[in-house]
Length: 141
Image 1: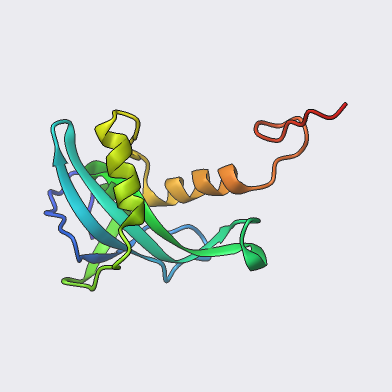
Image 2 (image 1 turned 180 degrees about the horizontal axis):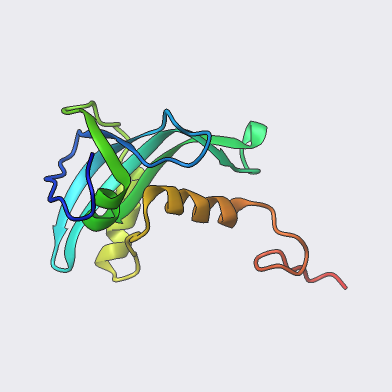
């Protein structure tokens, strides 16, 4: 088990258990890539075994998150146990490439939240908003 004070050498291909949200106990995080940037290390991760509500998908549930850039501290605060090294990495790097292009323009950020908090934020962002709520406004009168 790790804590925010333990130094872990995160590398691509590592699969970890992490402090999940309720109902996602079997979810794991896979490190896709490590970028050592001038402002710190950015770890690009994918999560599987999710039950993320997403009304834009058939069935309304998203089972995986293909890419999220996180700080090493955020990942360190999330992970529990290293369960695999040299895990196969997905061939599709579209999420990373899109982030990299935006980062090179100074237009991309990095999550500093724990993985569970990131999923909560994404869930709130994609959930249908009630009229009058943020992102739920309409031009109808």
